[in-house]
Length: 372
Image 1 (cartoon, helix red, strand yellow):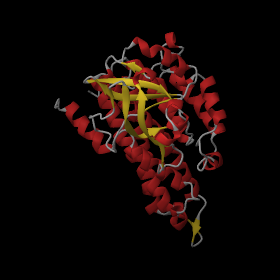
Image 2 (tube, one colour; image 1 turned 180 degrees about the horizontal axis):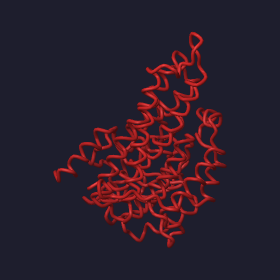
Image 3 (cartoon, helix red, strand yellow; image 1 turned 180 degrees about the vertical axis):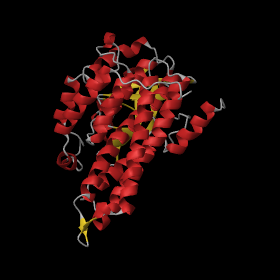
């Protein structure tokens, strides 16, 4: 990838989406609303979800033949940047990724599920069986007529209408698709997520194969590329959240006084604030670079490089912003009542989701050096 010759594009559609999404997210998710949902079982407002469906966000990148808008993956970046800026969490990311995973297999059997997702069905993908996002081995299997196994950290599983389960069948990787009501409550266990705006479960599977739709095709590529897209969407969310975190910091520095002097006048606080701003600008460049490269169904080498770079940088940016916000607020910053905690916890979650910075840098090195 030659960044010196690659021009980052920001289309008219992206600009319109960014304006509309920022306004809508600000209205739906003021900070008081975010806090009111922290202890809620669902963790999100159903009205907000319905408005997103009505706006066509669930089918934004899906083809028109499936009921989508066919705007392409690049359109999702400004959308998730806006969601992150307002800390607005719904099953949208999980649903979008489930649609992408199914679509990228190339299996015609996925079409009916894509139509449901575009129409507003909530969906998720059970990506991992361990705590390691880099693990490739699957123990979940379809054998002797049954789908059996377990999955961890399944995002938004509690409310999912469609659950996509990567599994092995006769030595081949497939996607087993089932409805949420096929998994009993006794087979689910809630995960306490550090970012309390998120919801996840572990699930245990023992379901008759006849009750499962099996999607074949290019499943390995579909899963790999969907996880990279997930990493980019988390990077976009993190960048938006970092902007709001910086705004919180600046507002505090402009109002808090010590010894009769605004604390924002001290260089020890000015310089890290500028460092946050510079890191945000770098993150924005990288997420929109990646959005520019996502112009085909199959991710190119340049698109993969851009996604790895965006995730590794943006998650570190939010962590740094959240950490400084807590420190600048002094003792109050270490209490959950301080909004700085919300950004720090989002940063801690985002750093690990879809692979931490080291995970992505290792894969980035392999791509750049043409190593395996």
